[in-house]
Length: 120
Image (cartoon, rainbow, N blue to C red; front, side):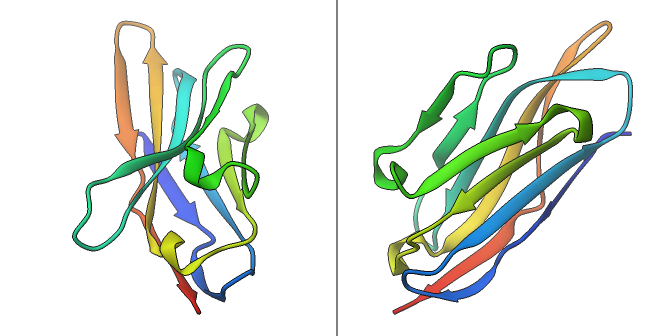
């Protein structure tokens, strides 16, 4: 059974930093696309950053470029989001998303979400 466990959210002042982690547990799969999304109250969920499978092409939304860094640890089946220079507008629930390849099929999974609150 596949599980995504997120951690690292919290309350921070503007200008501060947080590091989000997402670990995929289970077996019998390889990990492809990994991404971090966020959803603020009253807004649609949006892609923040992603890292592709294989060579790992990286994408950042314009609103986080230069502030956030996505990385992965293939040995740990983990993906991270280092968030620096946080702004009140970054307040949202952050979700990790992974696309897994099993022997006979592929499937996608969401983490449970972790709250990030940035105070001004």
